[in-house]
Image (cartoon, rainbow, N blue to C red; front, side, top):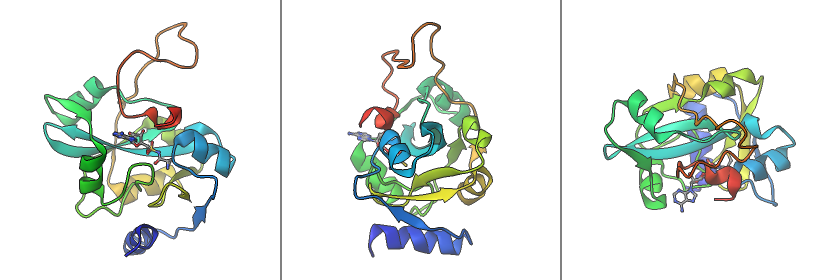
Length: 178
Ligand code: 5CA
């Protein structure tokens, strides 16, 4: 079955009405998706896979934020957390990076929800492919993923401007073109 069909089937099972929107210009990164949709980058949901002591976890991260792996480790109760390789992410979710939806995975993945996403009336997430997104609400996102709201956001040092680069590879580079 094709990726978007698999996503749609999962949405139906979860009773989440979705309309998949496709953009030929691509929605591979949070910035691309925000541009295509015409929304704030903070309204884009990055479904980022990390390996916590060897087990996948999902960090549903605002497109405006980066993940602090130390915080995520504390939240997940893990000793070591690192970003999943593309192969690991695909094995865990069944979808390729850049199109990973927040739900519809072969087995449930423990998920954590960036509190900044709660501040928007509507948010947009990937729908299975790097050109497909769907609109949802923070509450539906929480319900469909079973995510725990937790603060794993990287805080930007004062005076660092908007780039906030601290040298930590955190898997949220979608917004920077990953
Ligand atoms: N469709 C967009 C907006 S919803 C999207 O899926 N964005 S994303 O942030 O969730 O997916 C891109 C992410 O894929 C990157 O931030 C990164 O975590 C992951 N990714 C991309 N390339 C690699 C790579 N080489 N290794 C590991 N992860 C990668």
